[in-house]
Image (cartoon, rainbow over all chains, first blue to last red; front, side):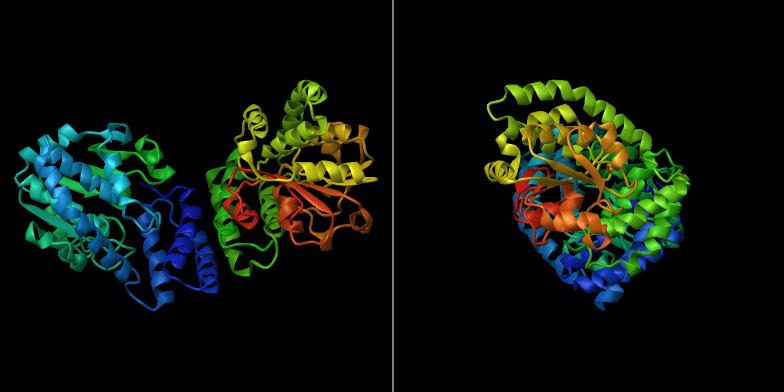
Length: 281
Length: 281
């Protein structure tokens, strides 16, 4: 997906929201807006937005003096998500369609995204995902069938905390899974360390994609990841960032996400806020 | 009112929305975003947002090659508003409180603002203004009393089209009124020419404030306007732009507006979308 004009004001909003979330001074946030503003002229609109987001969040990290400013927030997200885990695992087990329910919970957890909003209500989102009126594109049966057929699955993670719900889905899938995460800290996206904190390593092999962007930019991924990507019989891609960067790629991908902004919703042909399972990239 | 951090992404949104409204090429809009982005470093945050908006809309005008790119849209707004006029005048006449109803219609018309949105529904807004649950700060009785006491009134206009509803209110007030408008074209704000097209000159003396900003920046106003401003027993100020620039000024002002963005709503202590009559600047 390319970058749309509407992504540009959104980048500025991300700087303000992140700056406030990290308790940065208003003057420092203003400096960042100025610095980022001066770079708008050089934006490449033919690349997906997560490519520009790398420069944006690197700038924020530089101003905080930390290479992982979201570390504490990520640890909290994992703790909170783990507190939901036993109850949700029980619900999955008792469900008429355990796999369908685990898929739904994994999508609900895509709400944990500090790149889009600092406020979300996990319990509300779990209720929402059990209500079919929240679904935009909803190819759940096709996904369940694809999981049943796949010898192994490449699973592309997104946010920290969401990882716990991915783990529940991977346990329920009962298939060998390789779980790929970001190469380094970016926003609250999961790294290998964050995936381990969620217990993912108990149910899947955890690897880095080799790419530091909040998405999967194939030109920036490692050879190891690309070999898996090219040979995987099924790829489950979580979240907007992976969708924005992989949309249009020829591969057996199912995208699981919440359409969080009007640009992505427009690209998918759904309404903002709708929950999505689709193989149409 | 000062400029808030949140005003900055909003400026970028205004460029995109205006560019699309004026059917400008995407590449030209992108050029404007780059040009404006490079100026963020020099923003003065201690001045009201309409001061920055002058540079923004001048840049847009330069790229369109017209000094009044909203002319056609303004003419349409006036025509549409005039088509509502006879019916609304009748409603005012038959109302239990003609002045109260005329005030409400004048506030409803503040929705006609291409700086904030290109889409609005006048009929819906008229219904809304007759429903007290839409009111935030609602000092209608105090305003009616102040009008009754005032020997003459200085009325600060805002958008073209809204002018027609201001005219209805001025007719109903039955007081000598001086109606002040912008010095030159900016967004869809009314100029002397636009005020005349709405028939304002039949019910008030029309003058320019001397200021070209989409608001009333006193340092930029003419001596003639300032004399009136300082001596007026009552000033009726329409819209966000006039509120943003005059808030905090010592003067007998009633602000009539719709709180259209979260920054102004937050400054007023109301919710976005609420309708306001207040003497508390």
